[in-house]
Image 1 (cartoon, protein in one colour):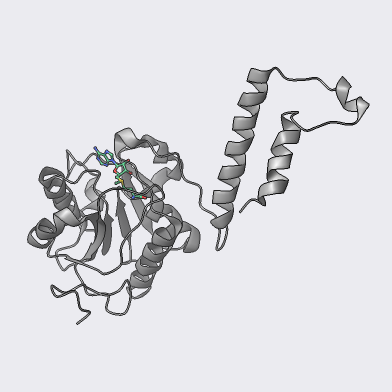
Image 2 (spheres, protein in one colour):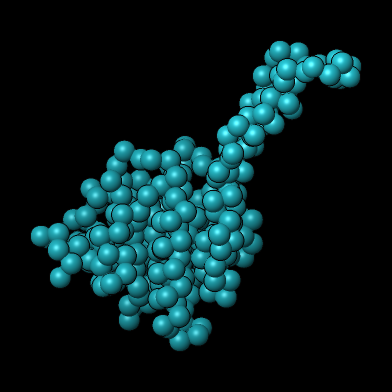
Length: 249
Ligand SMILES: C[S@@+](CC[C@H](N)C(=O)[O-])C[C@H]1O[C@@H](n2cnc3c(N)ncnc32)[C@H](O)[C@@H]1O
């Protein structure tokens, strides 16, 4: 976190707002009030970003593109991203090498944290936002409206599939469920779905997934309650499955 007073002083100095008692400073170029205001805003933004990024440095900071709300982009907060990445890495480590491929469907933050903490895990990001082309061959363009318009090599190739659909509608979950079935082999996969509580019955009906007690959180707080659904009981991790009476067992 910024040390309030010192950082405030730095911004004031940069924009030339400090009380100069030194005559030499009078010769310094002075900014117009409008330019000083713009510079102040810019520097304060930089400090905020540095402070937010600073907290993410533990275990390696992860750089994310700016959220585009028109694409329903809401990034996980750091704790959520780390816990999910840890769970996925743990699942992958229990599978035979070569069989442990992970598909991250519309969850770029998870992909980024997973690759940062476990670069050897084989992971593919399926995303609509072409900015994630920065991940090279790990990126595959994906539009949920065409749930199976994917390279044939991806069919039944993922033993771990994580999906975070862009919308909370029935139609969107039905289509994403088709994608999940396309990616997962018939013998089964570990499936993790992040979506609103409102999708609970559909998650069970379409994908046989149940909510965990772990509650995903986002960097920008959302009005809807979000849940993590899985098709396996993570037991002592992620709070385990929540049972209808709210208990662990
Ligand atoms: C609710 S966000 C999930 C992001 C996740 N919380 C994270 O932090 O990684 C939904 C994602 O769906 C993507 N998206 C938007 N429109 C899409 C579409 N038509 N098809 C597939 N994905 C789409 C967005 O780019 C966004 O990354």
